[in-house]
Length: 170
Image (cartoon, rainbow, N blue to C red; front, side):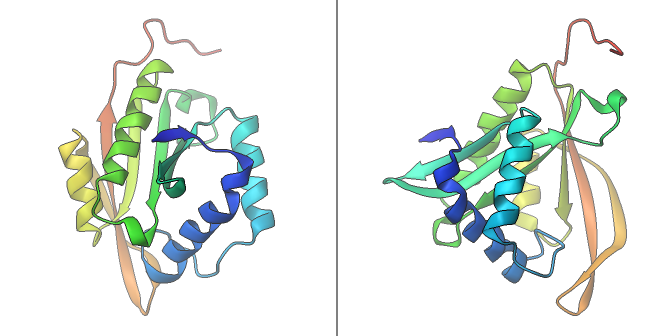
């Protein structure tokens, strides 16, 4: 089941996020985040009206997804960058894809024009999932980060959506 994230989900969301920090190159961070930081993140998402969804399986949160404006300038208001994280005990169940499809539908409803994915270039699973959902490769930045004793490259994938019928500059 996919549903909107609630404040009660923050502990498990933080657990999922911190596991990604400590054990993967999905996030170019070194230190786990505190629950206070996760609460601030949640409140900022609420304030900005950014969608945050969780995938619940047998009453437990198995993953989460969100997006926010690509960059903090007005002209980017129709472009979003998304994030999807799945609990390590629930990999390879299609949860990430289900969450992505839900985010895409939400973006369509909100008249978003472009969804952007920034992916570590070694994350073949995420790249393949994005390609299957229609995202196209748009570029690479070499040596963008340094983690686990090596230089990391990022790749960008983009999904163009219908966008607004009458975009504006307001």
